[in-house]
Image (cartoon, rainbow, N blue to C red; front, side, top):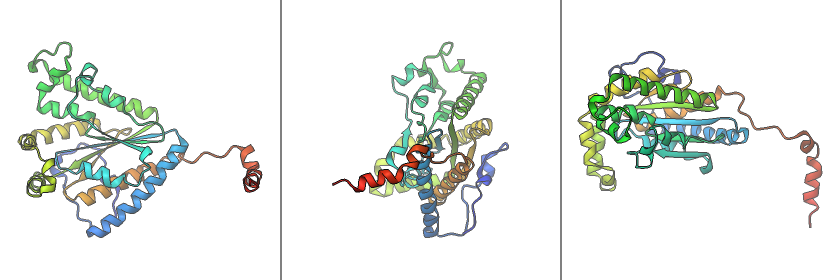
Length: 293
């Protein structure tokens, strides 16, 4: 199995999605990829336990991708070894009436991870510059000053929103949240095959919605706006990683490996030292417990 270098997936210069492969051949079968993932996710689980005791950092994992790109199964497989109290998953759907009474970032801000914990945004605050770009009429539901029709939504509006997202991520990163953003890069043909499987395999029928086909008609628009958003928001404090997603198993391993490698850079994450007085009296405490009737 060929080695994986997380740096190969990090967006550090302007990218063109059509030039980036959606499938990575690393000369490995399914068992090898699963074994590699098992090792990394076990290490991540141990790391989260140490993070919890250290209690200074939080980690925010952002997952974006077209329908069927494998976000749900990635969450299930990569984080299954975590202590259930150490990771929280949030899936953001159409804003509800309460959320629409606040600014668009509010619902994301209130569920940011606590110190010592991971949070996963399965679909993220980027929906507000992706879905709303393809369907600008959704912005009208936010009841914003000066926006009374789609015609009022100018290019400057989107530039401001991108800047707001960058500021949001910079703010939380400066306050101890490690932000990692993953775009699961799926080909249009692979999406077609996965949608067909949803229809052909009875146990997966429930996942299918006719809306999936309607959104598929906007494929090129979504690729355009993803590309724009990634290029304008991949920063040192909140980088984007483009992960080939036509092979789900490979995608999961790449994401897990990147998270592990990034976390290794935070060398200050360690279990706290015992208080000197407690440390000096450990033998006494042990004897006390052994003498109990």
